[in-house]
Image (cartoon, rainbow, N blue to C red):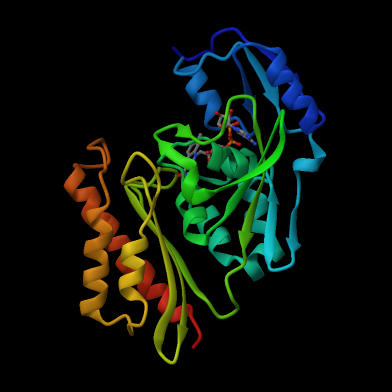
Length: 288
Ligand SMILES: Cc1cc2nc3c(=O)[nH]c(=O)nc-3n(C[C@H](O)[C@H](O)[C@H](O)COP(=O)(O)OP(=O)(O)OC[C@H]3O[C@@H](n4cnc5c(N)ncnc54)[C@H](O)[C@@H]3O)c2cc1C
């Protein structure tokens, strides 16, 4: 089936208006860039009766610094993430990740809010947000609250976002100047989702790892934060034996599906390879 089922459409002009529309219409759903939702609707895997479009809400736009943190509006596109000078300076991992999402056509429309709210384990941004210690601003009938990315993902397409709520922004603590970072993604071809991918942010002091955080994409029902693997690396010089131990710890928390991207064991091993490469590149980029 290549056409969606019948649905009504409205374009909200404020977050409050979007929340009211979601409450008013039964079986309503938010649409942002539409590059995950519309394909699902075409396949009839999603059949919302009413779409509420966020694209015209100016309060959801823009990237700004807030002290030591960076706040990204939910409808900022992946293309805008790539182009942002503030992000390139403060959180270069986001630019590196965005450039590995699909192709320019998808990046011109796909939004950061849609990417992290979707709950698809194949999306690249969720593991990166866990790695960075980001949190999500969520607005609903009862006002605004924040949810840590590390607490947000509960299963494939199942998140802590309640029905009728809007994810309005992503808040990221900027890693310290001189940090090392990398996003390594194995894909079958340009435009494909990850067979496996790894995000790393680390700092070095006196040639040793001072802090480290690791996220893994598409090797479980949810994105993964590999806390134990990162802890193994702290205090080390990233010598081969310690990296091997950390990679084994990261592989141990994966539980990938066997699919067209390969058998489960292969995808687990590829997560390890991606992590090894990301650690090496992060080390080369780090000062200290
Ligand atoms: C060919 C192709 C290849 C792709 N490859 C990749 C890839 O390699 N890596 C990758 O990460 N992504 C990939 N994508 C997905 C793309 O990045 C999507 O655009 C993105 O995941 C979803 O963003 P969106 O703005 O399009 O969201 P939509 O499709 O509009 O929405 C997705 C879901 O999130 C909900 N939602 C959207 N915004 C909000 C919000 N602010 N608050 C609450 N709920 C919200 C919607 O209700 C819907 O359930 C690909 C897409 C295509 C078509």
